Amino acid sequence: MGELRNMKCYAIGLVGAVIIASACASGPSEVPIPADLLDRDAFIEALLELRMGALDNAAWEMRVSERDSILSARGLTAEDIEEFVEFHGRDVMFMKDLWEDVDARLLELLAPLPDSTTSEG
Image (tube, rainbow, N blue to C red; front, top):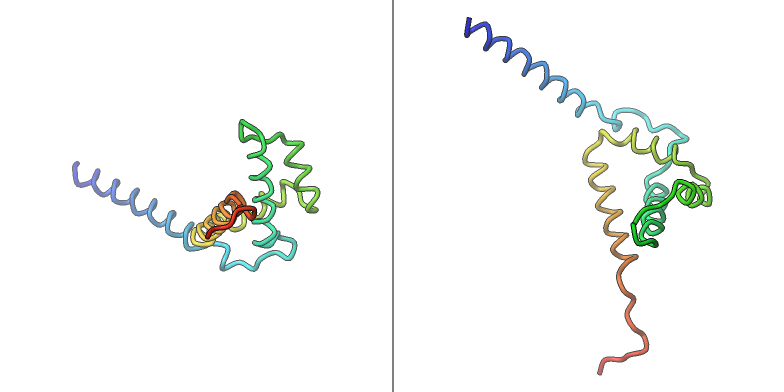
């Protein structure tokens, strides 16, 4: 009886591993990028503007109307952002690099400007 139980556990584990592996292996890099999909730079710029807008208030939150206004000024919608994430979301390395770029750019934007009125000497 124990051997049958071990075989079932093994089979379930194997099926799970195959599902996970196939999900990771079949990322969007194998699929042509749709022509109407937001490009990486436009996504980053929009996200930076959204993050900066959220930082403008004490709760670091943004109303939907504010989000939509920022996106609309760029000719975008929330659906454009969602489609980008849905398409690229399985590509772990792409998303990792993307978020690293977003974070680096955000830090640049938040860095204090050097005080040009003082001189070192």
